[in-house]
Image 1 (tube, rainbow, N blue to C red):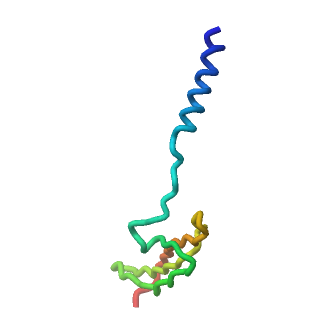
Image 2 (image 1 turned 90 degrees about the horizontal axis):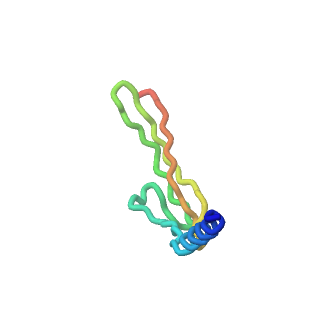
Length: 89
């Protein structure tokens, strides 16, 4: 019989707590603008670089790709990085 009164009270409490909490709003900023940018213009892709790691070299290619939009319609750009082992010159 106590469950009959407790269940609606628990449901009402859960509903009130859910409605009272603030929704998380997304943050479209980054402390590192080298990995994410916002704007309608695609950022320029950096040139390929090669790092000498001793016994082998790594070629690094970075490209900017669109990853959705902000609520006000601006494009979100994120930098993708690809690495490939290449012979050292």
